[in-house]
Amino acid sequence: MLKGIGPVNARNLVAYCGGVDPIFADRKLKNTLEKVPGIGPKLIASITDKKILPQAEKELAYVRKHKLRMRFYLDADFPQRLKHAEDAPVLLYAKGNVEPEAAHMVAIVGTRTPTEQGKRLCVELVEGLKDCNASIVSGLAYGIDIVAHRTALKNDLPTIGCVAHGLDRLYPGEHSNTAKDMLEHGGLVSELPSDSPFAPGNFPARNRIIAGLSDCTVVVESGPKGGSLITADIASSYDREVFAYPGRPTDPHSEGCNRLIQQNKAALVTSAKDVITLMEWMAKKKKVVQAALFTELLPEEQVLVDIIKAKNKVDIDELCVQSKMAQGKVAGLLLNLEFSGVVRSLPGKVYQVN
Image 1 (cartoon, one colour):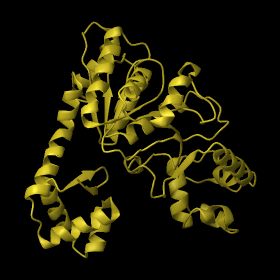
Image 2 (image 1 turned 90 degrees about the vertical axis):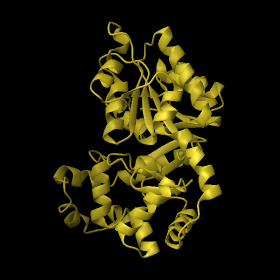
Image 3 (image 1 turned 90 degrees about the horizontal axis):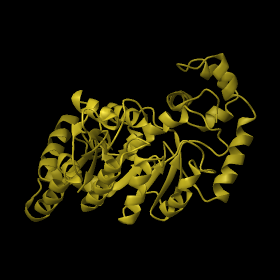
Image 4 (image 1 turned 120 degrees about the horizontal axis):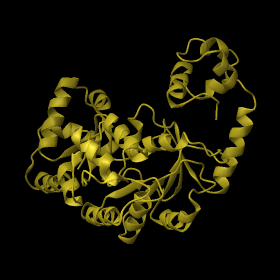
């Protein structure tokens, strides 16, 4: 809630001040703040503003009253995929039964004015993703977004809507019934507190959450400009896979998708099967069976597997500390375990047992 403090500055503040509490409790804070990169006199005045804590208390009361869930970036339950994006929100509000750690998360985006063919392709895409039980992530906007959410609900797939405002309202209002249904099988997320004003900049900012929560982003239809292309660019910057449906060269609804493919910013797909194949999700299922039946682990491999099982998800640095092995050794063992289908790698050099 500090004016002028974005996610990057917030992380710098926590790091330099030695935690969150000192930012608001240290009487000599000003001396520390002057040493933090990117923090000048205006931001220091914002940080030391005594009105902030009462505003935070008011927001916390709202969260408790409406049974929202807050995930702070230092908390264990902060979405792991999102944690590895340097500009990710420091706090994520969630409403409903949001499960951001599903095995497969797919962002589906596109134009707000799709053609009938675009809608049909979106429906077929979501229906096909049922084969790998994917969770569908989108922005609850008009067009492709709402088609993706509604189709996910019809096919009993979890779906998460990332909105560009606080969770005390819903835009567009026409999608309120769909949003209510999503609360039972997915939900809504936002980085913005209640009473946040509508602002044009909120929409491209929320696109990084859509991209960051997902393993891959699929653009179904897009004109030459728009939020879906922004989401695709962000996903690419996060080293996530980007896919796009091709269209006729003369069709303005496909201009954005065709350009993504032409510029090698997205792989061409025509179905959910293409997405599943390119993500190697079905292959991973087969590897799990093979691992369970045939893999005999070396003693050092077993040590790593036991550590990962105990923690559920572990990054390579922690594995080195826990196992007391050199990083080069650990990296080699993990590579063998991946090839054997025993473990899988997640963004940010994080590992999980299959």
